[in-house]
Length: 115
Length: 112
Image (cartoon, rainbow over all chains, first blue to last red; front, side, top):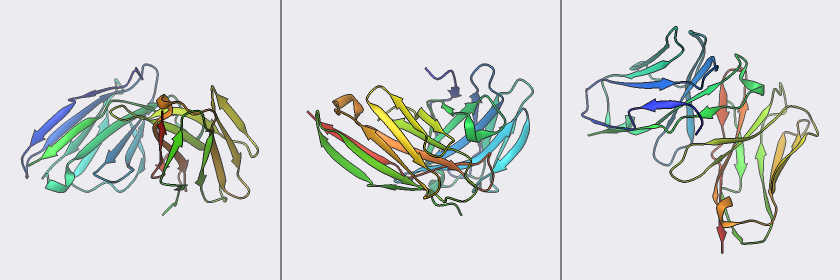
């Protein structure tokens, strides 16, 4: 158990809808990362927060947004959903603001299916 | 765009045999190199974080080496066991040390 909690585990929704994925980092970790894994793709970096502030952005669509709250949990909001947004979304946390020397601890992921 | 490349994409190993595979990364502006193991139906799990040229790390039968000057890291599995079957990912922070980019992985299947 990594200590990172993601909810829900599974989400099935229709095109055009909006969903919110939630992540609680490991106790004491200040950084939260979001990754997307689509079919036959590797882990694609979306966005990273440290102690409530956005630190890095990857290839995150404009329809997607995220935030990290004062209690350090994070939410990833996906709107105007398309079939291609179906993927496994991982949240990971690490202890330090600088990622390079701190391993990531991954949650179990949220499986999003857009129909 | 940062290219972290892993090879081979997949390999099959007989139980008891040893194996190794490669992660290649740009050798300029090196910060660190991460290795993760990702078992089917689970989430990626950190194996090593390597920061210094010539670093060698070991965890049980799995070890890794790092060459930052030529931009590669090797992961070794000694005496492979069926439980070593997984996808092994390396990750590299690129021009922004907060942005950890993952390679596509090497999928190892150990045959009993």
